[in-house]
Structures are given as C-alpha cells and as structure tokens.
Image: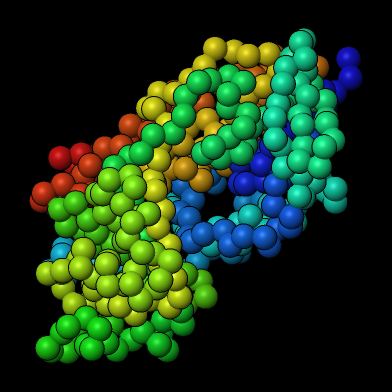
Length: 392
C-alpha cells in the first residue's frame, strides 16, 4: 500500500513539528500556510517548554540539542507582586528548572530550518475543505486551485477552517481581555522611574527592575500584569482585565496616547512602578480577546481528518500549556502515522484518544488558573499554587 498523501493546514508549532517528525521517519507532508512568508508576522513572546510534553516532542523531532542552544538563560526567574508593588515571590533562575524559556520566533525558526525545501506552501490560504469519501478530502485554496489529500490535519489555530469537518464547537470568550505592550531596550531606556507619567511623588523602580530577569505576575482583583523579559532585552507585557467581550472595541486603542490613558485609568490606585509598564510603552497597545474551546472538546472519529494544537483544544494561557500541547500533538500524531503504515484510520484513532484526555486536563487547569489569578485575594491563590498546594 502506498504512503498516504498528508496535508497539514497551518505552519504553527504543531504543524511544523508533525511535518518534522514525519520527515525524520522518511515520510513527506505538505503544509499549506496563509502567510506569504515566514516573516509575515511577529511570533509573540517567550514560551516555557515543559519537560513532560514540549521537550519530549523536540526530542522526537531530533531538535532537542538545537532547542537547548537557544534557551533564554535566566528566563525561568519568577516574580510575584500585588497591586501595591509588594514583592511576595522573587525566585532567580538557578539553572535547575524543568521549564526553560525560549523565544517563540527562535523555536519556530528551528523547526522551519529542519524541513526540506518545498514542504511549506507559503501564501496558500485554505478557504474550504470538503470530504470526497474513503477518508479523502479536497482543499480549496485562495488562488482558485484545489488539492486532494488522503490525510488532512487541521493545525490552523483558534478559528480553524478544518474543525467544522469534525466538530460544531466554536471558541467562546473567557471573560478576560489582554492588552499587549512592548518596552524596548529595557536596560537602556526603562531602568529609571518615569514619575511624570505614573503620577509618583517619590522615587520608585523602573519597568526593567519590576519585571526582572524572567517572568512577572503582578495581580489584583479582576486585573493584573503578566510580563516577560525577552532575549533582545525588551519587555513583553500583557495587561489583563476582566471586561465585556466588546470592551476593547470602544476603548480607542487605535490611538496610542488615548489607549495609555484608558489603561492607566483602569489601573488607577496601583503602584506607580506597575503603572509604568503602561506609561512607558513603546509603540501601539494591542488588545487581545482571550477565547477558549469548551473543556473536554472532542469528536467522533471522522475518516481521514484530525486536529492538533489550538484547532483541537484552544484554551486560555493560564496553564502555560498551549504551545507545549501543540508540539506534543504534532509529535504524537507523527509517531502514530509512522507506527501504523498504510492505515491512516488506525493512526488517527491511536492519536486522538490520548490527546482528548490530556487536553481536557490542561484546559481545566487553564480555566482554574484564570480564576485564581484574578480573584479578590490575588495574588495569594497563585502563590499557593507555586508553593505546591494546588488550587486554593
């Protein structure tokens, strides 16, 4: 029996890992990606790659050493503050942690460089997918062409065009919105306090010191800051707020000055050093609505098609699981295809059932983490979790 033709929709971490694991085992796949090039969009901030899933995936892909060479040394440092700027936790990165940080763009480039030329069809947006019978599907592309494939994998994220082939589920609003903020060259521009913009009447720490060397959680009831120091010495900040889903649309985020004023008002009464994460922002403030699929999202086996990553189990980022699950999904599906030569249905069944279980656990953890981070006694629930006490 011939090897099945394999089409992967989406060149994110999951789709790239799947293609790489298949390539390692001598199997070809084609990735259809709507972006015109690898550099069409920025790739977001830092990722902590977990020992029990993301790192296993990179080992399966033969890329673990390359990953370790790109790890952000010191990036596992963690600080937890309350809204008054009181430091409740300040842990340095001593090199013994099992969740090393890496820039998402660097990880994606590692995967891109590991694939044969021509694996990815850039600028090939999938506009529709239709079953043909016997597990085969036809993809319609934005240039008017079509492709027929024996095995179709939706790796195309939150608003997947492949998901409707297996499920009627759609993402729903989590109740929390982010505003994405960047502060560039932090150790040159953002070390001293900007008292003029924060309203401080005494000296306080600047953003570089507030965030520290790794990750910052500064939390209060219904809102807070999540921030990372990046490998290029920038600070990548998310201001998080419990707001109606349409809040950002009416808040004037198209105008950076107005956006700063709106956001500073939302954090009125917070410590001036935390408000500095807003007032010293470089460039636009970008709102992000945080959506999730239902916890326990699953589907009955549909011949010839499956989903990986956010297409299968979109969740909020409060378990740090999204990228790790995408990597692991890609590796596990690749292994299942290799282990069931000539039998795509057996491969997909072997992949899906464990995936459903692990993603349900992670989605439940993410939903609980969101509630804990912004409840009335924040940040104390998070501190209890970090101390090993679980959700409190």
